[in-house]
Image (cartoon, rainbow, N blue to C red; front, top):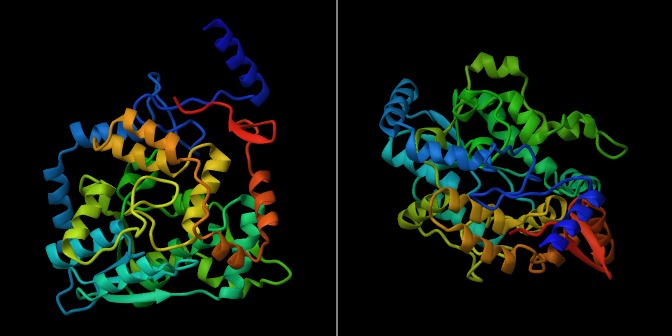
Length: 387
């Protein structure tokens, strides 16, 4: 035991940072903005405990009913917007709003980067249930250039896409005069992050959108090939315009106990929702999440490269927090799949990013954090494996 302890200290000295994991779930302290209490439990687990033990869900339901009564259309107009990917979570929100709460939502989609057949099917399946839908596809010359640029610079080809999915629903809300938007869940509280204020769990805040979802002002992206006017789909509306329409944006997950797995079971029962045809999604053990974009497998692999945890840790931690999986089983699954290379759509992504496989692999390795990774005899290994 003593020798192992000394070796651990030596590794810590090399990396300059101690990496540790939540005592309840699998989340490491390398996750951006996550915090831990004195017992070594992450704030996502503590939030989950509140959901189970402290929240008065009947009172939240009453608050939700009162909110909808103030906005529900009486003349057939759209009374809310749902930013909608076609996935389980946003489909769950849309379906309940329309059929359970008798709202008239307009679904707004910012296009996936490289759409999948499963995603296309699931969007069409829900639309056929009786929804109006706007599908926005940005200038692909601009979007692909931004994707390649941010893959190289930040190890995240979806930076501009993140901006688009946050911006386009609000732009349409302003243009169409629709004052209510329902997002799925507040990720910073549900999954571990920085909560700016208590109401942030319920009400979507513009400051948080810029700081956490986009992380940049898209007007900074002008270069020799991209002009300011090219960036219109990514630039958030002026706050005065938003205020003039009186737009309020809420998180559905504040009013109802949020669970991605339960959301999947719900939509599967309501319409022909397809899952990953391989039986599980590359890089994880689930088959029902992030199915609409071939780019997602690479996105989660780069998360593993940059922060030392992959899609299994993400999925398993959420299920542990919702009492659907044990930590022991999650640990077993993480050892099996968390490191899995995104080979399935690799050629699609190389073509999309206009990179050779050699260039691609060199860029990936440049984003390895030396606090997290070490190279032993030409093989990359985590300094502090999950235990």
